[in-house]
Image 1 (cartoon, rainbow, N blue to C red):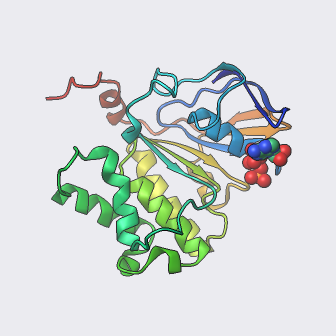
Image 2: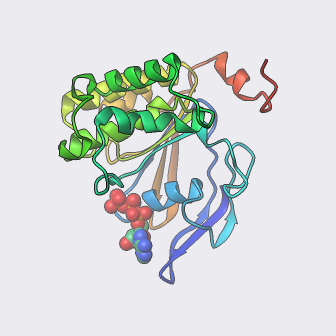
Length: 237
Ligand SMILES: Nc1ncnc2c1ncn2[C@@H]1O[C@H](COP(=O)(O)OP(=O)(O)OP(=O)(O)O)[C@@H](O)[C@H]1O
């Protein structure tokens, strides 16, 4: 994002935002309540329009970006619930749809990715339960698993540890550690770094809708995987 600016209800909520998330970064967006963290994440993903400046995802504006399978987003609050009750497994499996060709049945690779995602958040034993009957913290883990199931290159999480107990915070840290070691990228809104601290490569602190501080804590993990990410679409055999 370059010179990013967002107005909501006539009020400037973000202004002058210059932020580049590098491949392999595990970037923590911090700052007080109301400083604009969720707004920034949503604007970076094109879920909110900019009133000024410019933002791109892998080189395309959000409106032109097509490769959404590369991006996993875990929102702060649940859009889940209502409608037809779905099992935990069904919700997590819906995270594969951007990777599946239309009308194709789930493959063994799809099922394995869903199993890995359920394991990663410690919900393998709840796979057949109705998602809407789980606690808020468990539903948050279902949404994290849904994003992981798509095996995205970048995962974006808005306060993934809110309402999640210490054991599950450590489990998330292990999962993110694996993703980071593979050279994947993470953008996390965090109130405190907690058990994720050893993984964080950069912190960016927002105050009153502006970047107040940026700190590089460590370099991203070296990875051969990142080179494959740069291949133009369709170049793979
Ligand atoms: N739809 C909206 N219309 C008007 N103002 C909004 C809207 N959504 C958010 N805001 C305001 O924008 C500011 C930034 O909100 P945002 O939710 O991005 O902050 P945050 O840093 O994520 O806060 P928190 O840590 O509490 O989630 C707040 O002052 C908020 O009241």
